[in-house]
Amino acid sequence: MGKCKILFLLLISFIVAESQPLSPEIMDFGTNPGNLSLFYYIPKNIKENAPMVCVLHGCGQGATAAAELTGWNKLADEYGFYVMYPQQHFPNNPQHCFNWFKKNEIERGKGECESIKQMVDYMLKKFKIDAKQVFITGMSAGAAMSVVMIATQPAMFKAAAIFAGGPYKPGSNIFSSSGSMVWGVNKTPDEWRELVWQQNPAFKSKYPKVLVFHGKNDPVVNIKNAEELVEQWTCLHKADTIPDAVDSTYLGKKDVTRISYHNKENEEAVVFYKINNMGHALPVDPGYCNNQGGKTGLFASDKQFYSTFYTACEFGLVPDWNVNGPIEVITGSTVKFSIPTVGQKKSYINTWVIPEDCKIVGDNTGTSIEIIWGKTPGTVNLEEMAPNGCRYYHNKVNVKLKNN
Image 1 (tube, rainbow, N blue to C red):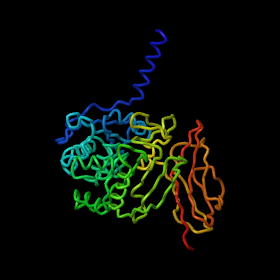
Image 2: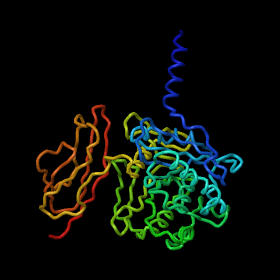
Image 3: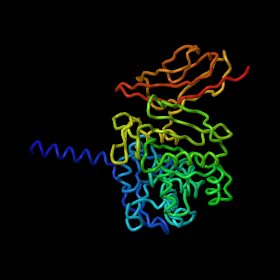
Image 4: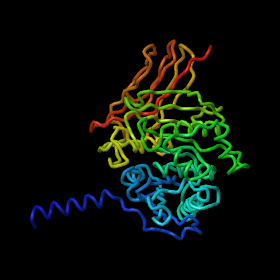
């Protein structure tokens, strides 16, 4: 066999291994009033009561393209959850966009949003999925339709990640809605809340947590839409629009700012990721580390920030992401911080990052640390380095001082 033929076969086998093919197309998951298709991905050796993520593609894409650009299937293999991919049909929209701007497609019980709801019901019935751990995410038109889903079915989803999207019902028709994406539209938080409330006037439970990702240079969907989306969902969570925490270089990424808004229980209700020097795209970070992935393309930009991974972290699908510890301390007190121990990481080099006036008690190289707290507030974080050089950063704790 010639070298070229061997190389060709190796390349084909690599592509097949990397593509992680989806299920066959399914159309009979319900009455399907929106005429959409369902695809899904199931990792090997999936455990019972596993979570599920619903991924909605952008315009000009389909389920396979969304899977390849985002890398959700890779994370599903690593952390054990189902992935569901709704897909638009050409007759519904020649640009292959979800019709997030058509009234008969975005109101509870109607059209495309009802089809996606039926897909979730189908998956819950067919497989052993934890109904309390269902998440949704999308890019562009898929992001807008993801907002439609949490607005019309808030009890179905625990959290949503919205990439280059906007608020629910920005306009009253196709022209005003589409125009709002370019120019933005301004409403009061109460006006935005009312649009969602009208879909579920009897809903009294907690609304899904919302993650908002948006490039500051987006020429297709004005970043004003992200700001209005934050207003809509902070209001629904009964939170204000004054940030509770701002990290302008999140995880050391100079172009990534993470802004969080807390509810009355001091839980993060809305998180806004602003990405500098990025247009209408999904931020990715191709590479071999566990916290790297995605593929660059027309709607995906290498920002050395694998947003799919950090969305999975925010969803709680990555079990050891958060540093656990007190958020209020007394000066001079001894406090402990830790991460959950997942698997064997004895070969990792751990570096705890703490305020300068704190004193470490004992060892600082493990997955937990004891500190005598100083006189100032600050943050506690853990950086890990694997033997292969990959660095992993955890979600830090912002610690405040309280009176004795």
